[in-house]
Length: 480
Image 1: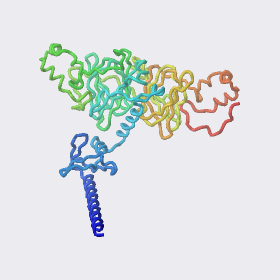
Image 2: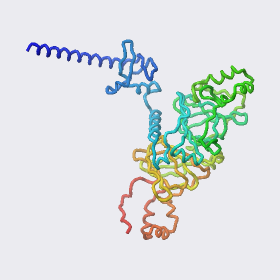
Image 3: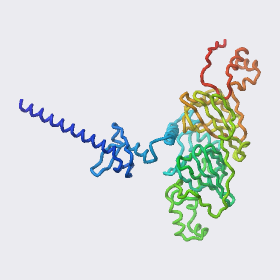
Image 4: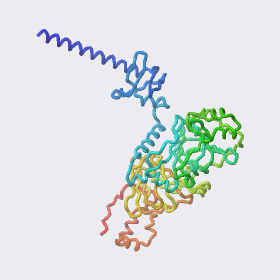
């Protein structure tokens, strides 16, 4: 019995020791979470004076690391801390960034017929702390757009972020989705600038040297662009030629022999080396000064941009509205054969089945989520896609399409058409259906049903263009 008693006593002491250890470890966790002056190690970088206490999920302590004088304790959620260090706890901007990233990621690598009409992951041309520039790449929708000589760009600038001077080998139309900025460019030895805000549309010609600055200190500047790539070399989407930069980004000057540059600039080889090696921060940097220097060129205000929100809506009813900007509204669009549009659908509403006889349409989802239904000429389904904020989809010219808003909230998308002429959509359903414009007997014969049934069928929908999503409350007898 005596050995058994000793064994039980030892087990009792061991349990007391373990309990004391757990209490002490818990105390260390609480103390560390509530202190804001310790050093955090995130991605190999040390940050001090964190400030506000940061909560760490108790079931995910392995993702957190804290350095103190006494040692190391895994207690703070690195992602939560990183979010605070980057500008505070969440908010609309962070939610938008996450939503758009999720939309692009969801498309990355998707295959199948429907992938032809929704953009996958775009390629990062530039990614720095001050912003990001993405462009379309080959594959899926990008190949489809490439055959139509169309490229797309997605620019995000942090507050005070500056996209360095460069030019593109394609005509470009900008659409400002969010924020305020200044577009500056050189034309005929004169420096032009125009201030941009949400909803603004502006055009630049191929080969124009320009830079863009985010003027808003409180939010990111986001610009969606379409490029006419007809003149692009080697069949690629388009290229960015930087004339400002150094080691990173490399400028077009870097490709010349130093002796050539020394002669052209009347400088020594050492000076050329220095000038082309100082900049290492990338193609998007934080602007050193808020007031731009305009050098020796004359400074002129450019033609004002056209704001799509200033345009009288093309159509509006209780279920949503549409707006378009074409060459009649903003003449520079005629030079690049492009127009812009905005569609907003209330929850559950749908843009009636229709086709665009004049242009291919490329749209960017800016709010909410919905479905896109596209039909092939032979009457088979080309795509039935769920899309959300951040997704890009396109509809070929003359292909029937229907966009439907989710019942969870409004669905909004903006985009470009490949014609600068006024849009003339042709609708299949609704009060303005093309079927209503035809002789009813002819339509009935083509469907091989009685004329009175066809007339009743086509006359039920009193709305046009944007239709309510609710089904008809009264059941109808089947056509015999």
